[in-house]
Length: 637
Image 1: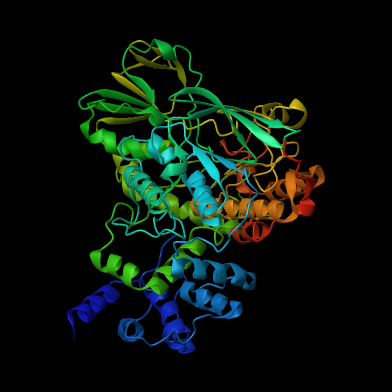
Image 2: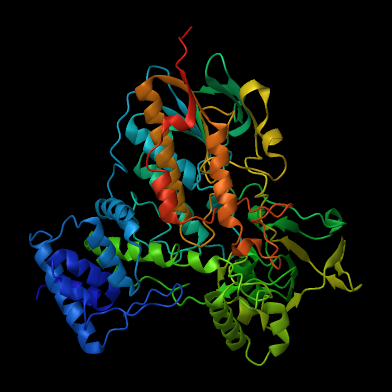
């Protein structure tokens, strides 16, 4: 056995068996790998089920066959099933999950498998021929803006990208607080067209930001990118069929023109500061987690943290060991789930396997895609006949609740006094569910307090709660999230007839067709806009790729038909949003016991969509210009 063969055998010995089985079916053409004794048991929750539930003898056979098949493929033997039909792909996925995937998933599986296995320099084959002077303006250089820039450059469409910060990365560049990181597996939270050699299953924010910087470098986006350039106002010029966009950069204020604007400024922007009386009077450092000072030293300090969302759950375990005392001011507890790979390194053997065998990497990702998204969605609907609506939605949701509660009890041990503060009273998934990175055990530390009495005011010496107690502090951290209800609030957008987008949407009534297009705002598309988020988990990167694909389809349609302006029809927009409202009517985010940023002041869910990833993927495959009022291109001059 050569050293390469031995290394491959070592890699396969640590691999995910369900993914190996899927790979084996394609490599060998033998469908027996989907039958007993290789039948995969169904995993629980988000568990990746690495062993597949197979008996040791069967697992050993799978691994030995996988090594043989991989080495034969490396030696030149072609795949026995290079292009499985859609029905076979669904069958393979179902077998690898131990769970029946719906038959209609075939087209999406075929598309994703092709994208991931080739991981091409070209994300998708599309070459366009825009007329002279045609240009797209991309606002923002986070994940969405970067994806748009890659697609535009690849298609040959002139564009300019502006970013208000001094570096790319969006939310991952802005958030530098201790413990910041992704809570979706990296192998899913990455572009299909830009794979990466991840060294951890869940990387830090800095590492993810480095990945995005690497994508910018890999696709040579720098020449068309302006950093430190903030958009102040975008206004539609009807006669010229152009957007006039006022920006402020290092050289002052200027007005840019663009035929199409893609707003990728994101959902988690800007930070939200709570309206707490006396907040400005605090005598020590006081800052939002998204505005973490680079030179702050909190070691030995009495720290207060306001909030218990994602940024608090990540930063508190990181801060507590060095703090003199840390007090968490909690409005409501958050469900967090265990996941053993959180914080663990990807073994070198697995990094080798991912790099050497794209087909294995593809099936590993396809399984993650199902496990972390659409498989959960049916359990988030309210069963009107369920006898315990005060605690859960349905029988499955109640099982989740019991599982998570038992986990919390194990984590706190004999500190049962903490359970009323740590176990939520609302159903699981009512708020964004998080991965436990030590939150519950941190709560049991002697130098950590969970304070659930409401805050009355902030004073120079600390935080006074409604019971009159003053909690003396040296530093106050606001882990209070972002102004997500006010979509596109960082600049003014004025559409047809001088109508401002803020007047159309109000403070928190944002709606858009497919989360992207708004009637009266021609040639304008927002990424990660209203009701874009699935709410059932999964990767926002996948959503952004779908949205950018759709926008590119619209641009292609404009160029093919000679259109100068496309404006979403009101009836199309309204019909889509009526469908969303009906879908969301009986979902967990409408539960009366849940207080969440997913809902606006009237109780309407404005952030999540509630529809399957598959359905949204299908909706964004092709752009039908009949959904738009189309105006021919105006004559230049």
